[in-house]
Image (cartoon, rainbow, N blue to C red; front, side, top):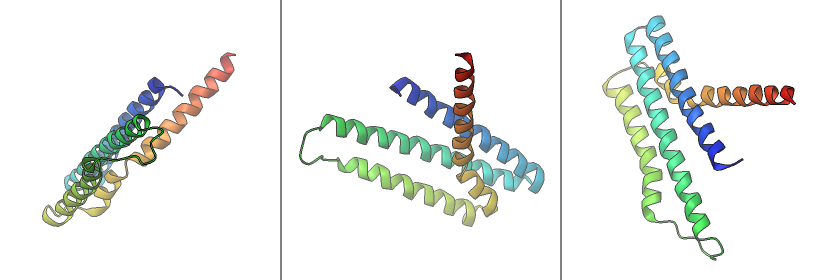
Length: 138
């Protein structure tokens, strides 16, 4: 797999994440009220932001490792550690504020936070479907 294919997969996962999060938000708002929809929307936004930051951090570590290939000790700058753990602290702070201060329902919020899972499954099905059609074209 080349870099262009990897970027396309990551882009599709992000789109599937936002799409599944929007669907969850709509279902929550229609089925359980606007506050549930708000919780799902906030959870989805945090899931998307977490995915983006995790992707950027992993890319930076990979580039750093490639640049230091052959070195006995690979040195990871402290800022990368701070960004990695800061992402988790921010995620926890927003979830805490959402559940405690805004008093939004926890289940829709948590459903939004895990919107990446249906997105990954959709990407998997897409790749299987695409591979099946490629195989039949031969």
